[in-house]
Each structure stands twice: as structure tokens, then as C-alpha cells.
Length: 497
Image (cartoon, rainbow, N blue to C red; front, side, top):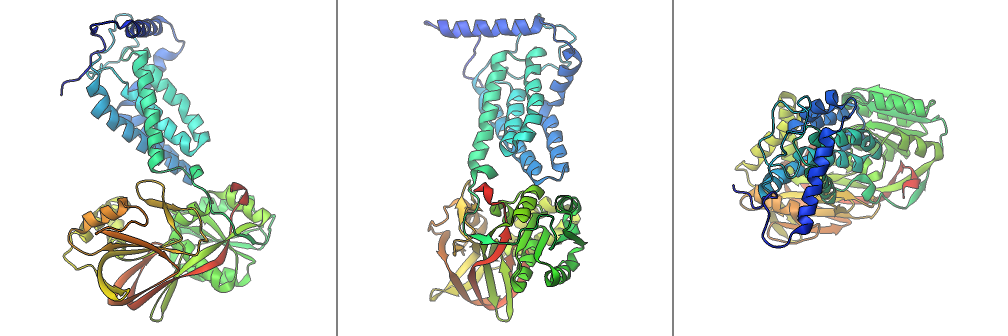
């Protein structure tokens, strides 16, 4: 592909401003090349090479994720997503639109020069764009971590001028583009601080200054030991019970029988079990996020041990709705979502493969197998007629569009089920994709949505799978979904409103 503009070729007419800017750019480059920077000759060229192909930033993201902090993991993912957007923009638009040669290396000392000189065009700097995108993405999720990463990103950007492979304007343009990519990603997937946390109603809950009366059950399969012990440091009189997944329900029942406040540390499935036990025993619930996604804790506004400790010490809590499903004699609750159709089949298929090939690859394989199946969509009868469905989704509360797909709830006590339906028909993958990008309440040949207090689905085929908060069960005959308004009291720091 031929580039469109060559910055080094004078254009006809009066371009005094452009000429002056280019001259300033050259002078700044020569000043940087001839100036002695103490200690930089050993560090900056190596740092510049380490950032090739994003290796430095991928290693940094891995280090952040390895800390086990949910906020650090989110920062790592956001940083890499921002870097990916910036790199794609640079490679598809930036360097193909401006044909600017690299600087002449004559004024750059040989000791600074890279052993392998880049062969692509100079404007803008891809290294600066990647560095700025990653650092800005991390900072948007966590200012503290951003402050740690920013000096490294700045050094990588400056190293490109120091080693003679970019003009200062190349670096500046790349940095601006990279930061813009991070903000664009935030526009699609907002950070936690841009999402309004759940509001009233506030609830009356016991204040436990030292945690006495709290029993927290931690699911060890979710790698929660460090978080549970950290809570023990914050609330020294709280009792911490660690157990295997198969023992979680029994330990929660035992804890609920003798505690003042029931606590749980684990993923959404474990939190679901704790909520059901807390409801039956009439106990307020403490949720310490310990899973991979932690949807309920995220929407609740509880991020880490500090949030939990503060709420328990001060007795700060809110009342939230609980969803309930019934099918024959079977009954269960859900805090996040409940669904029939393709998604439960995908969850079951993913579980079969995850132990063999890992979580993310298993999800890809499961999606491919489920969407290519020749089985008919779910046949369900409601509103006086029989309807073929690929998916029936019910959210416990309204899921709002904050990005490309509905992702967050701003109110956990709105009294509504957010019901989405993907109609049956050919090409399920296209229908599900159309539903994903559609608005929450749009109606189309592929997708429909409505908010209700209660929903009953008749004539569900025996053995149909139902997924609730990541767990899967089989249902037969009619399925009723309903809300239990403000049924559960959950601790949460109220100062975040």
C-alpha cells in the first residue's frame, strides 16, 4: 500500500508554519542526540528493545494479574485492551497515511543506536502509542498502579528519540493516539468509578468493630485464602472457615446457625449459595469477591477487603432484590442472571472441556460446538402462543448499556426482571450477535426485551438446561421466574454514593 503524505517533501504554496514546526522538530532531535544523559546509555536502549511487539507491557500485565488483586487484574486487562486498539490504529491507519523517513543517525552516538534499526515509516511512534495506551488504561482503572507504570511508559517513549529512531513529534503523536485509544476503550467498557453504585434503600445491619459475630466461609477452589486471611487482619475477631467446594453449603448452614452475620468469599456461584442460606436463616450477608468475574460484588460496589472491613465495622448495608425460579418441586434463587436455551448448554459444554484445555479455550470450543449443532431451539409457550427461542435471559434488575453490550446494573433494588429473548430461526450465531449489540429494550426479528415483575414459561421440554449465576440444572414443564423485592441485606460502604 502506498502512503499518502511525505512530511519531508515541501508542498507548493506557502507553508511557513509547517516548515517552522519541522525545523523545530529537527533541532529538538539533534539536541537530544548530542546531549549526554547520565546512566541512560545502559538503560534506555535495552528498555526500548524490551518494548518491541508489546513484550514489556504483556509482562507487566502478567505481573499485575499475579498479585491476585481484582483491581490490578482489571487494570492489566484494560491496559492490554487499550494497547491492542492503539497498535491496530497505528498499523492500519497511522503509518500507512504519513510516509515520513526515519531520522538520520549521524548525530546519534553509536553506543545508543539499536542493533536492529526499524524499517517502517517514522510517524507516529508505535512504541510511544503502546506505552501511553497501556499506562493510561491502567491509570483509568487504578491511579496508584498508573503512577507506578507511568515512569516506565515515559522512559520507553523518550528512548525512541534517545536511540535515534524517531523525531520528537513522532513520539508526541504516538502518545496522544495511545492515550486516546485508552479513553476510547473506556467509552466502550466503562471503569468502575464511572458507573453509579447501587443506591437506596439503606438497611439496618449490626456494626461489628472487630468482626465479632461474623463467620466467613471461603471457597478454597477460588484461590481465596489470601483474601480471607486479609479480612481476618482487618476484623481480628471474625471467624474464617476455609473449605472445599463440595463442603461450602454444609459450612454455610453451620455458620448461619450460630453467627450474627454470615460472610462468604468466592465466585458468583458460591455467593449464590450463601445468599440462599442467608435468606432462609434471616441473616445479613457479607460478600468478599473471590472469583474470576464477581458480577454481584462489582454491581454492589464492593471491590476488596477494605470495602468489606469498613462496611462491617460501621454497620453500613443495603437491601437488594433476589430473583427466584421454580419448576415443579425444584426451586432456586439468583442474584445476577437466569437463562434458558443456548447459554446453559454452552456453560455445560465449557465445563466438560475446561479441565483439559483451560477456561478460555474451553469457552471457544463450547461456543463452536453449541452454535453448530443441528438441535432445534428451545420451544417455549408464553403469552398465549408457542415460540421457538435460542435464548431466554432474565436479569435480577435492569442491565444498562454501558458499552457494546449490556454489562452493569445501577440499581439492585428496582423490583424488575430484565427479560431478553433471542428468537428461534436459522443461523443462531448471527442472531445471538445481533442480540448482543441491540439495545436493552429493542424489538427486532432477532431480539426482544421487556421488564416485568414475574414471568411464567409453559411446556418447557423435559431435561432443558437452566443456568443461574453460573450454575446449571435441568428443569421440566413450566418455569416461573419472579422477584423477591429487597429480600436480602448485604454489607456495603455507603460513602461511595
